[in-house]
Structure formats: structure tokens, C-alpha cells
Length: 173
Image (cartoon, rainbow, N blue to C red; front, top):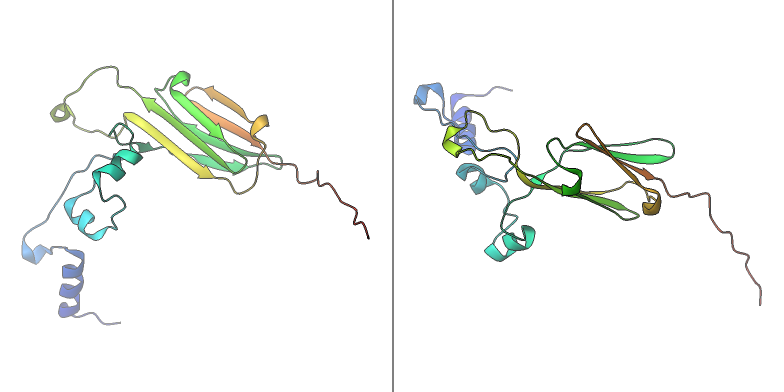
């Protein structure tokens, strides 16, 4: 496929990119994991939240919620959810499990106040965080075990025992 300069300009215009020939480059810094979006990305991205009321429904007190990173894997008997949640007290974490989902919510509190202009890098997320996951298989919420050691939250969810199928006899009337 041959791309000529007219094609390049079309794609640059489409992407909003500047070339070296233009002599301009745009750089925008955005805080990670806060839901902040650049003006350009906001104009292209689908709008998920349209009104202040919708935002307040999502964030009950107006504070954004960061997305918790997780690893989810299975063993022959369990589904295991792990997450590194350093700097959070166990009392500040809520874990809710149903037969088909898990929800983890919490809050990481900053111990000292730092002004935004004093940051050289700000990559850690402070404030509320959460994650809800639809599980690939039914689990037994009553048998779930939650451990928190060295900043790692591990939730072990026993798979629902499919072998306990109750076979019914068909009555002929």
C-alpha cells in the first residue's frame, strides 16, 4: 500500500496530530486513575455521564472513585481474586460477594497534605477506589475467605458444587 502526503495529512487531521513540519507539538499532562480526560479525548470519547445528577449517582459524595486493579484466576475448586491495596487499613475495605459477582470498595487516605503544585510525579491514587467483577462461574458466598497480608488482599471463592444435582423422578399420571 502506498501512502502519499495527501493521505498522511488526512490521517493527521483525523487524529489531530501535528508533524515536525508544522513545528508544533502538543503535550497534555493528566492525573492517572482519576477519570480526568483531556479536552481532545473528551471530544472524541463516548460520553458516559451527561448530567451532574448522573455523576452524583455514580459518586455519592461527588468524589471520583479510582478503579482497583485485580488479578482473577481459578484453581480446580476456587476462583481467586487478588489485589495490591497498599496503605489501606483492613477496616477501610468492604468486600461483598454474591453467587455470580464480587465487589471490593475502599478508601486510601493520605496522611499528610501536599499541594498539587509541589508534586513532581503523582501516580499513586488517593481516595475512594472500587471494583465490581462478574464471575465466570457461580460461587458459594458463604464459604468465601478473605485474607489481607503485606498489602495484598486475597479473596478465595469456592466454586459452586455442580455435582450436587438433585435428580428428580418423573411421575406418570
